[in-house]
Amino acid sequence: MTTHPRDPQALRRLTGLVLALLVLWPLLRLAQFSPSALFASDNLRVMGGFLRNFLPPEVSADFIGQVVKATLETLAIATAGIALAFAVAVPLAVAMTSSLSVSRIGPGPGRRLRTALRIGVRALVLLLRGMPELVWALIFVRALGLGAAAGVLALAVTYGGMLAKVYAEILESSDRRAADALLVSGGGRLTTLLYGLLPNAAGELVSYTVYRWECAIRASVVMGFVGAGGLGQLMDQAMKMLNGGEAATILLVFLALVLLADALSARLRNALD
Image 1: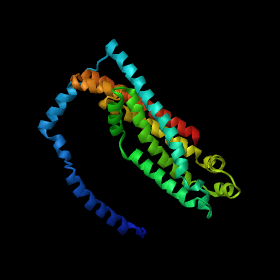
Image 2: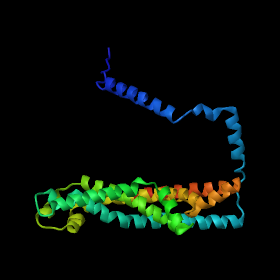
Image 3: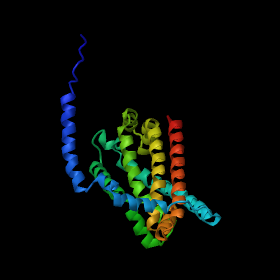
Image 4: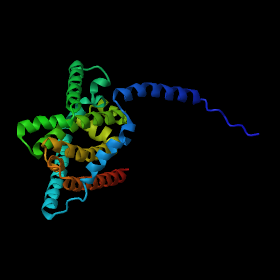
C-alpha cells in the first residue's frame, strides 16, 4: 500500500490563504468591485455600441502621417526622458549607497554629516518618485505649455527617483568584499564604484534601465492625455471628437509599439545574461 507523505506546510498555507481572503474581501467591497456588472444586459449593450464606433480603423494618408509623427514623438519623449532620468539617478544613487561610505567600515571624521546627507538624499528621492509622472506632467504643462518638453521633464523627475532608489538597492545588495577592500586601502567612492560594485551589478542595472525605458513608452502615451504630446495627445483629440476609427488606429499602433519595445528590451536583457 502506497502512502503519500503529508505536506508539513499545508496548514500554514491554508491559514495564509484564509487570512488573505479575509483581508481581500472587504477591500474589494470598499473598491465597489463587482464583475457581474460587466455582464448586465444594459452595460453589454452600451459597451457594444461603443466598440462598434471603433470599426473600421482610419487609414487615410493624412491621418497615418499624423500617427507616424506622434509615434516618433512618443519614442523621443520616452528615450529623452530616460536619458535625463539616468543623469539624475546616478549621482543620487551613489550618494545613497552605504556600500560606498568609508564611515560604514569604521569611525572617521564627518560621519554624522555623511549620514545626514544620505538621509536628505533619500528624502529627495522619495519626493521625486512619490508623485506620479502624470502629476509632474500637469505641472510642467502649466509651466511650459502643451508639447513634448513637459513629458520629457515629467519622466526625468519621476523615473530619476525610481532609478536612483533601485540602483542604490542593487548596489547595496551586491557582493561588498571587493568594495570593502578598496575602501580600506584608501580608494575613493568613484574607484570603489567602478571596480568594486559595478562588475557584479552592471547586468542587473542595465536590465532594469531597459525595463524602465519600456515603461516610459507606456507612460508617455498616458501623459499625452494632459497635453504632453505624442500618441496620447492624438488619442485624446480623437476621443473628444468621438472619432472611433482614429482611436482604433492609434490603439493598434500603440499596441505594436509596446510589443516592439518589449521584444527589444527582452533581446537586450538576454544579451546581458
